[in-house]
Length: 148
Image 1 (cartoon, helix red, strand yellow):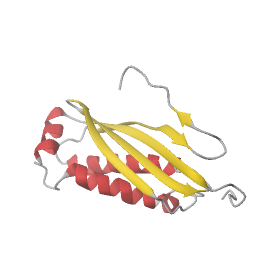
Image 2 (cartoon, rainbow, N blue to C red):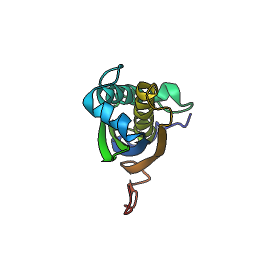
Image 3 (cartoon, one colour):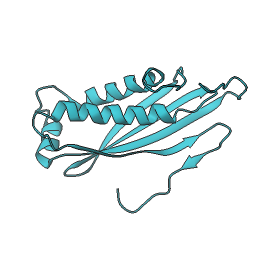
């Protein structure tokens, strides 16, 4: 594990996103609350938040952090695509990129798990860091592209 004790404590934020591609009929079931396992977005949001808090237990050599805030949000991109976005903040000595990426990934896996009985062809795609701020390496913001 990298020694971060000499680093300055600063406010650090990371934003990550990912896509879940599924059949339009599956997305309709999610919207209508028609899946046996319950409210997909509520459960996936909770799973993503819980995963962000446990990232240090999941990723070897990743520092366990006392996270100050986590959001996990969902948006419908088109008839068969859900966009997941997570924002994680901490006042600390190391960044929260891994926590934001973990939140998005586990939220996507939860959607898959809750919908797999009706749609085995679900794809998880394009999990990536969108932005980060704070720390010695400075800020990062992914350049926007025309498509999703």
